[in-house]
Structures are given as structure tokens and as C-alpha cells.
Image (cartoon, rainbow, N blue to C red):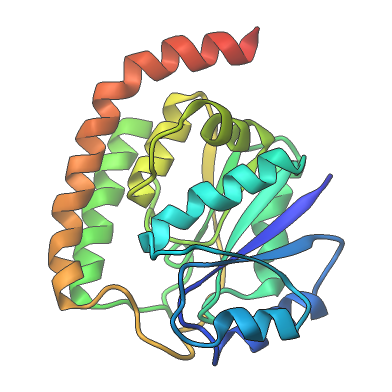
Length: 243
């Protein structure tokens, strides 16, 4: 199976060399691409110097805007699996098999690498923990099975989900909860597995105090929007895909 690892990067010149080195050391046959979200530092030139294919946004599209870029790239280039991998050093290449193997075994269409499932060592901020628990509760109720780390950026998608977002769902992706719900409504089976993660190695998180306050309201807005699209997605996409 053709596997693509997509590194999401915004002003990660200090951390991305170690991230790419880690991926190269553990490479079991996957390709690597960097989605540079309009960095103002030397992220793009550092990646070029390391001979890593890079797609650069001309304007910053927030972190979730990069999802559409790599999903479209994976679809157009015939990849069977694409994995999102953060450029800040949080994700570990040795953990990739954990989120890829359930897809290879046909056990899931989308796999979330969870920081909290069987792992009590990773700690996020108090405000973020409240948001994570809130949205985990809401999505678990909709899915009718428990998902604990809905904001994790360590995710793998199979060809079915890649095709859904690249070919059918043309609108923007604004929130991880939106991605999970749309995938679920399209018929994808979503699961999560425990993974080990580091704390951010360099730079500053997008979740400053203001974004942390806005995030729950934005997330709830996107969930409501997805619920309104549910019938249309189930009717149109499922029919087209199954045919």
C-alpha cells in the first residue's frame, strides 16, 4: 500500500529537522511531504535543504486548512493511506505503525492516535482539557462508542476517507470535530489507539489564551453544521461510493 506522511508546519524551522530525521530513521516505505502553512521563518528553506517535498500556502489557513491540502494531494497521487504528523516534534515516527496497521488490517478507515488512552503521562493545559472532554463526550454520544482524544493531530486516513474529502466534500475543514463527524456520516469506521507523544519541542502553540476561549464555541458551531449536513452526506456520498 502507498503511504504518505504529511508534516504540518508553521514556523517550525527549529524543530522540523529533527522531525524529518526521526521519520527517515524509522521509514518503512512511506513518502514524506511537508505542508508549510505560510511560515514567516526559514521552515520552507530548511525542508528544501533536506530534500523533502514541500507545498507552501501563500496565506496562513489555520492548522485545519492544511488538511484539505494533503488530502487532495494524497488523492491525486494515488495514496492508499495518509497520516498527519505535526512539525513541532510532538509526534514520534516509531508510533506510526500503531495508527496505520488497523487500516491495513481493514479494521478501520480512520485511526486517531490518542494521548490519553492508556497513557496518563501527557498533560495539556486546563482550558484545553475542558474542551477535549466536552467534545469527546459529544462525539462519543453520536458515535455510540467512546473517543477520548478528539483533538489529536496524529491521525491516519484510508483511501475511502481520502476520496470523500478530496472528491465529494469541497468545503473547508475548520475543526477536527468536523473531520471526525463528516467521516463518520460518510460511513467510515473510526477508532483510536494509544500512542506516546512528546511535548512541543520548539515554537509556540496556536492555542493561546484567546484561541483556547474561542475554540469551544467554534467547535460547537461546526458540530451543529455537520449535524445539519448529515442526511445529505449519508444519502449522496454513500450512494455514489457504493455504486
